[in-house]
Image 1 (cartoon, rainbow, N blue to C red):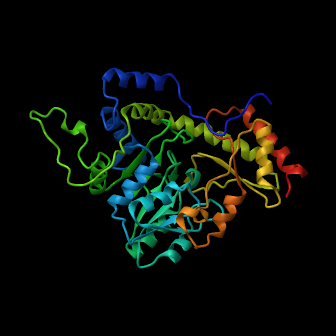
Image 2 (image 1 turned 120 degrees about the vertical axis):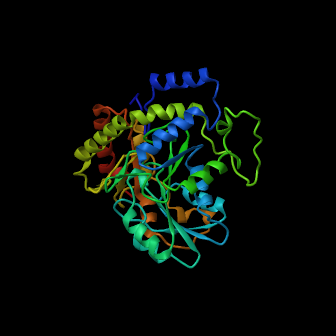
Image 3 (image 1 turned 45 degrees about the vertical axis):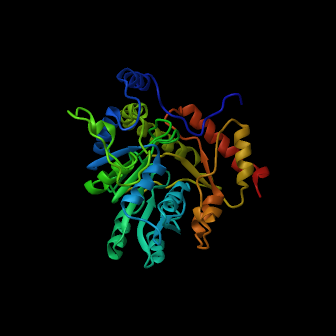
Length: 379
């Protein structure tokens, strides 16, 4: 096959180029400028929170969130195990210790029962991950947190446009964090955001994301020469105005992008649901799935590596799902998360993005059918 069908692909064009050109003409390209300010207001409105802060990426947003929530040395933070390690890394950056909790076998987000079992006297909070965009069980998690005096953070890295019980992702916890990496539903190549309804957390995060002072834009128009004073060590976690301009366009595209991804997911379900060697991803009725990825669970009899090599040879990009964090050596964990470990071993992501045509989806599905039914791809 001469044409490769990409695993993920951004949807960008002339509107994004025009937005970037406008920023170039303004002369303000650096972080936390007018375009960032406008994007933050628009993004907060989209996710239904009082505050949004544009950041360099989701990892920096997670770190800011943990810092302003007070996580530090001697604390434990419970983390949904099935996630890219940025979630666990951010806990380490804060000085606290991640404690990984196993996940649901159907939607792969953290199991509330496992969360409650992991709580100790050192636990200060819970990070739930919206795995591949579908929100976790926030009503149950909030009830657990309230019983034990904990905060809840939503790792909504993949969740732009998702909902849970009619509420937008990003508004479901004390703080939420988003990613705008190139494979996400809306993207500037890189970037992130922190959202919250709490003014105190938002104000502190904004200070810390600019080295510990107010952004320069806050001093524009002053009649004297204000000289900021540093009373707290912060970070350079600001999104550039170039990226923010792209994100403003992407946010306007979001409804169409979501509709396209949901169409692709529906077609995959039609074309693959009869295959006994596959389990298709679940989308629960009480939440809207944004389909950042489309991830198949392969039967244990299949050799995932062989399946992947065969698909790639046919021009179909694919990859594993995400990580069973407790198995990563950096964390030194002894806790067992068997559901997450099983998903880590058997998940396979196939092409999912808003640019896929029906013909490409059918080509992918036919290739998957051939590959998983081939005797050469059995263990």
